[in-house]
Length: 154
Image: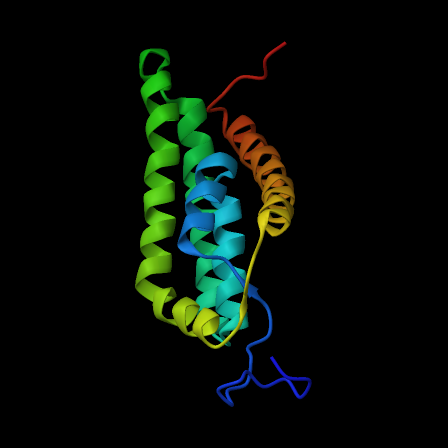
């Protein structure tokens, strides 16, 4: 890239680092749906798709809001299957979203000389996702306790 911000082809090099599909798979399966939401959000923001960015965050919060009470309310004999199956399902969903709505933009970004997000960005996404998940867990637990659906363990 030359000093004027243009790639050798004369195209403007895009700003920002995008998450690729492989990063999405690893980050989501290891760290959860809030990380998927953050990665999708960041990519949409880089591509100037603010409306889709909001939808991605809403979808990840919705998934987490459904999973948390479900994890608490699943009967004991089905708990192991639930905890093995859900990470696979939300990872597949996140990858589908990225394939459906971002794949072309990611390819264009990289083709034009844009950067890809590295491991440190995935770990930063995990930190944000963890903070969001803890806040959601506290909120969902409080709602379930207030509704009398679960008892407070002593």
